[in-house]
Amino acid sequence: MRINSPHMNIIYKACMKASKSLIRDFGEIENLQVSSKGPGDFVSSADKRTEKIIIEELLKAHPDYCTITEESGILNNENKERKWIVDPIDGTMNFLNGIPHFAMSVAFEEKNEIVCGMVFNPITKEIFFAEKGNGAFLNNTRIRVSKKNNLKSSLIATGGPKKNSKIKNLIFDEYIKISNILDTSIRKYGSAALELASVACGRLDGYWQRELNYWDVAAGIIILKEAGGYCNFFQEDNKNPLKCNIIASNSLIHKELETHTLKKNIE
Image 1 (cartoon, rainbow, N blue to C red):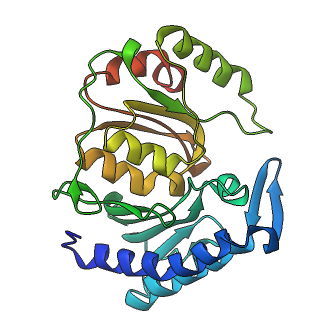
Image 2: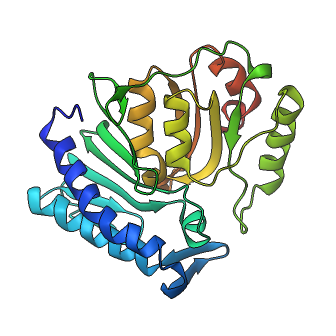
């Protein structure tokens, strides 16, 4: 593992420690306690346990840093200069249904800029990570975005609207519009962090989605950028800066993907 910075090393150790219980939980899904956070939004005891382990390790190293997490919210909010951003299981529904497509996603932000991040699928043992200025990696291999140069022949992924979404029609309209352009059907895998990582390593050519949370994408953004990708990141709601929309792709199809998806609807 080509880890250079102390912060990246802290993230790596936290994820490795948390992965042990998460792998065990994945093998005993039927025994997990599951509760609903809202329509179509669930949290398991595994989410809470994984988050607890990660937070403990991060704050052990830097107890004064702010921590933004999916389940616990914002901790140490008085420190706005340095932040850990944590999603203990991105792809909870996949996890709960025994689908091995989910990941821990952890990023470090300094002065409002993401400087390093890791997306780790403990089942496949794939670790995507990046540090600003040092490139992006999948385990020990340097990764780059694809060289696909037209949207029509590209492999694109997205996520559907949430059950209680107020913009379902807009999301479906975008889906239909892009579907009519592409030669292949749109993919939907259920983990924003892994979708961004997949664009970063060239498995996907592009990805867009509305109604995400910052912790879903923070680590994926730095991985994508360091792999040579382009990313448009928009706040969805000025009242809640942690809600966001995203367009991600290689540089060659970005303008075309942007034209048909989020840009004109948000500006």
